[in-house]
Length: 88
Image (tube, rainbow, N blue to C red; front, side, top):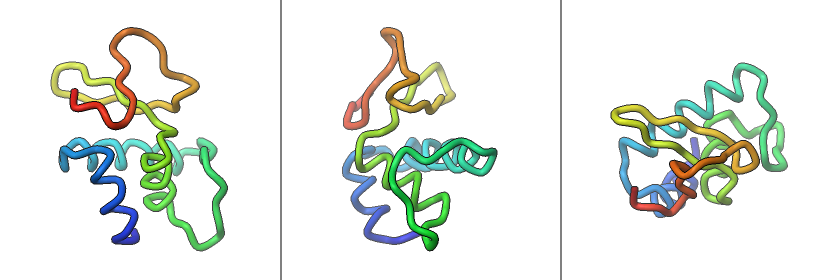
């Protein structure tokens, strides 16, 4: 993963543990066949794609007790959704 992407994503998701969880879940989704939400190039790995999606605000997360669920902005619904940039 590129350091500059990590730094930019850390400005969006300021909790390092939450950022790691979001990236990990999105990488798993991408590796299991989900389509990227951004234009990609052949040299981009799943981690770079996930970080870029975070930077561009393409993902939302749901916090439920001790777990985090990641979905695309189009899939998100309900009062428990928090767009990137939220402190919750």
